[in-house]
Image (cartoon, rainbow, N blue to C red):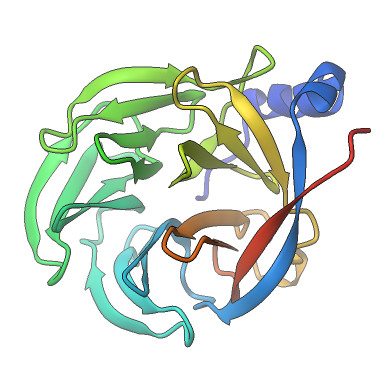
Length: 261
């Protein structure tokens, strides 16, 4: 995004680093080990990502250059592409049955495509901003930059309930790219190197993943915006992938639990 961090991000950082002494001891923190790295298009401003049947599906942002892509994992090559109309800033994507659903940032418009052809089937609307999507076997889950995740009916795409995400009672704002992994929702926290592991039953953060040192964004043209964002999971082979906006690499990682401070 080209958004600017607000007070909510500052308060969240204080909760983690200052007033979060309790949070630091009560919520487990995981580090990582890099298993493999793959090429990633450095022109892809990653907003949405998921893995399906051997391919990555990726949504990229920026008005005028937003896309939906099918990407070969090993090479990073785009094998199929749809250019989103220039007035829209593409955001999160998710698959549902034979469809692909995409959000846009501030235009309150979403798109439903045929998953195979990327042919546009219909549009839908929602209030507020659209940031990211994921799903379980029954519902879609949507982030909008706040501490609240919306639960959507996958057919009507209407909001049926909301989940407030908290870490030891403190709301966690700036929830961005999402992925459903083994009954939990993993969420990038925008402008940080952390991923929150969220219990969807109550919204509690049950773990933090600290990805400090994974990639040096200072070598990128716009390190203020080219941040960590993008989580995908290969359930069949238990592989976790992460990347960032305009990063030249996508990483397969395993989690390593850190010792308590």
